[in-house]
Length: 396
Ligand SMILES: *Cc1c(COP(=O)(O)O)cnc(C)c1O
Image 1 (cartoon, rainbow, N blue to C red):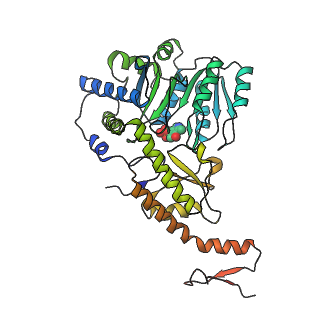
Image 2: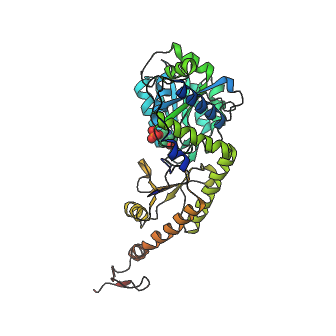
Image 3: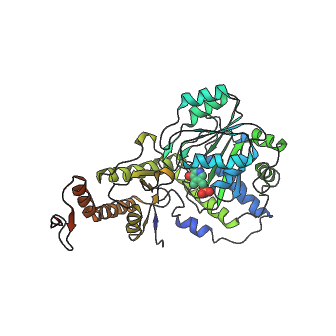
């Protein structure tokens, strides 16, 4: 059915029943059919987040990718107050850039990409400055780093700040205990570990915090978070025309996770991540992060120095495998391998076998490089020679 196996952090290969769901009947979003669909999705989202006091939380669904949910939160909850973004990667920077457009008092505390937050520095910053809202990314997808929710939630609470979190790539893969971590709002999307099509995102938040948004300045109309809350609360609908068929698909993807069991779903992803990682380590590859800091969605791998990443990706694509390139300072330094969506252990084994072949296909380049680096005479590669005999000193 699928031409490509998507070993990416999203979009993902969807389950067959999710693919079928998108072809369901046409309904009007101002009719009871849609109200029921949205209610059902909301209930399931709250279950995925394992919220114990479900009367205290609501979830709104936005037509738009994960960035729409992030922009909705950042444009709607800060008002004229001070927001601090804590960043250690591409997606933290994006939160900062979005917030900067909507909030003139946006501050940034930046850590090296691929390195853990310095909690001491964050605490000192919060003690010294009046910060009303703290925002961060849970799983920094650009490196694969899982940032500390519980500690950051406690620090925010201690310092009287609202805590908001981008959970776009962690929801559905890692435990996100909103109550324990004092999270007021978090965002996610349909197309990462939730395993549906791209195009929908959602915000889960505390009811009392949603209510407070009513009195804040309106900075956007389409993405105004209070409007979404108002519509779901009063009509069980969305403010504007939603992508109805994507809602059917999202509903089915959530049913799939809940049928497996949320915890079992996490364990399955972790097992797949471990299987993929063990295979890559056996091929002699090295990872950007310590495994203890990694999320179970993907693995970020150093590109061996003799390999051109564009050629490498192309060779894998010829075997129907799609992987990701590094962003920002990781460009041309790493590649990323996801393990979410409909990827079986057999698919991962196929990936590992293909990866081994592709890596071997670069061996000639590696041998040539090694000789050059050792300061030997320039080498020439003889066409059609076997690998062992391929390199001979050039005639001088
Ligand atoms: C993918 C991602 C986003 C952006 O999502 P889009 O669906 O591309 O808009 C935001 N934050 C994180 C952490 C992500 O991984």
